[in-house]
Length: 292
Image (cartoon, rainbow, N blue to C red; front, side):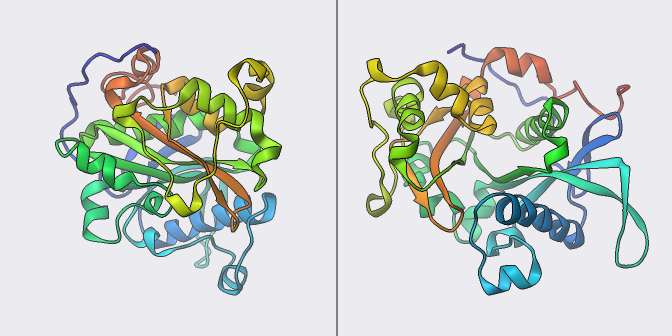
């Protein structure tokens, strides 16, 4: 892994509600402006997680057709909107369609509420406590509308995240990433590949909570078809690996969402230099001032 140079956090002001963080053509990445936009992001999450994938909806989720939980009320919501695809809201006004989203929870906000969502699956508090001088941020609920699952949308989402990291002086990103399947044996190659090739070094290692721990070391390294395992991994997980992410110790089965989760840990100091340089040390690559 190539270590990134020290990032001096050149942008000083926190990200504002609704602020634009980048643009490519008709696509804009920005923070949600109000609860109505958060509800639209929740509808997008429902469409992807429950209708397209295999999440199991309870009665309330079915009735509202939104993927929502208490964390949504105090998280920040990063959105990609398409100004070329305008939709009428309940008041009849045309608004750009929300086509991608990420949920962001900073440590100081988590501390004032119920902690990190990820703590239900991994002992992340031990890592936070061991790095008391560092600022942590949780990423979650990532999804993109099917026609927009391309390089441009993903790059905009990551441009927005990078700008957010710089503005809030974040040192470590973490969160769960999902592999579709609740049968670890069916995805043994992927889990073992991550265990042998991306497991976090001891100082960054976090273990799954004991009663949910699923062993990832399901086959010896020499028996893994690395090319096949890498190809099978979800695009989001592969993207994290390219950025220089570490993987936690043990997987967790999430029966509600029909997935097996792995923990992603991304210290900013360990990010791949190539990607830091690509988005810009000041997150200027797709800044709204530049031509699309």
